[in-house]
Length: 248
Image (cartoon, rainbow, N blue to C red; front, side):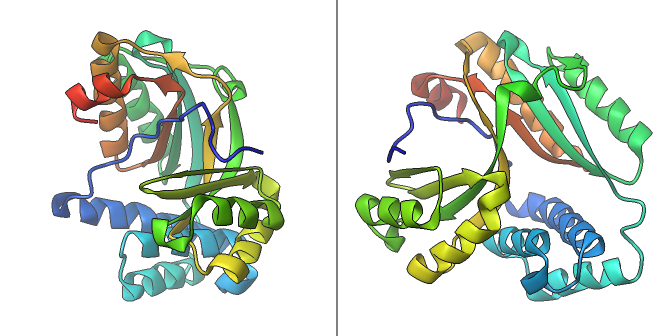
């Protein structure tokens, strides 16, 4: 286990501007509702719901919104939601995983396919990309949680697989099936995390040049703008200088 990983996985996230917060809260609410529907409405007894609520709180989602999302599950409003994973390739050959939560499978599939086609990408068959990624748990702490050595020691003690630290904070990763236990152990030693979640981490990266990177970022942005899309992951490796030029 190392304090730093040589591979830096890139996850493109939406700008957190006020104009997008309503859409962001809508996606977070759906995730909470589905988690509450699939298990107990009590986060203490439902690890997925606990993760969904933690992610909502990390985005400053009001408590009333969270409570309403949980109550929707009890009212049966989550019955039509379906989780779907699409795979494809973007400009430069970068692999993409697109996670969708939708009440209309046909609409979601058509929209995702169209966005790939309009932005230099191609949809792939199931399994064509996912084998290049590992499904992992990710726990994020702010810089104030401790120095790199303290965080690494806490991560090892908690049973995590990897930890990275930089000026923006600390990222601890664990096996998917160990996430709940690692979160509890870290909370006991470091306090509550800034955010927790389930991620797709690329096993190997695909280098993407400047010309392809611009189109790739456009594709990812368009996918994330779709109401049904929850998260987009890519194994693209883009130089810091190129990212700076493109405003990433």
